[in-house]
Amino acid sequence: MKLPMRTSASFLVGTVVAGLLCPPAVARQDDPRLDELFAVLSTTSDPARAQATVTHIWEVWYESGDERIDQFLSTGRSAMVGGDFPKALASFDQAIAMDPEYAEAWNHRATLYYLIGNLEASAHDAERTIELEPRHFGALSGLGLIGIRSGEFQKAIEWFERALAVNPHARSARENIDWARRQLGGESHDN
Image 1: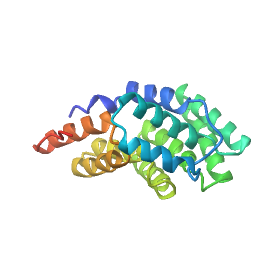
Image 2: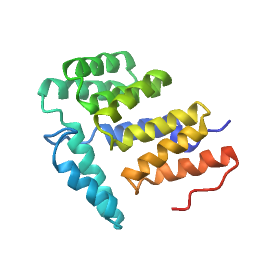
Image 3: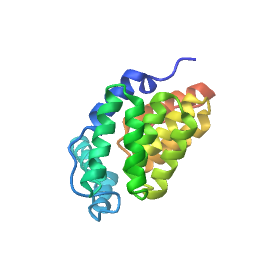
Image 4: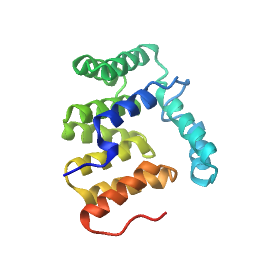
């Protein structure tokens, strides 16, 4: 079975480079600015404003507020992009151990687990991310990708729809819904 383009290793590495290496701001998932950013994201019809808002949300999520945790995440991201998965895992494990309430540390490790093919661990960490930050469209989409990779297309559709509920501008989520529906023999998502 051919998977959609978004699940290829080159796409994932590109996503890691583009998304995980963004410069951080000083905040985390409990930052009060996120409510306003998500309000803008859900109401804007301007694609440029939506993209800028998504970038700002990631920046807010990325900063833990602790320089040591930030260093572990930075080291882990660099190791992951460089293919040194054991070093990345050790770094993300350290960040989680230092602050198990920091959603983005769990999301980083979920991404790594996905890349190395440990879908069960990836799903666990993505679900923990969502427990801490229910609007985490990255983790929601990640669970959708896990569903696709596992052949659980209906579950994948449900996760991507949840991602679209918080980020209606996520074109890749719409494309993955269409792809999964085709696998099930269903209709495309026209929104």
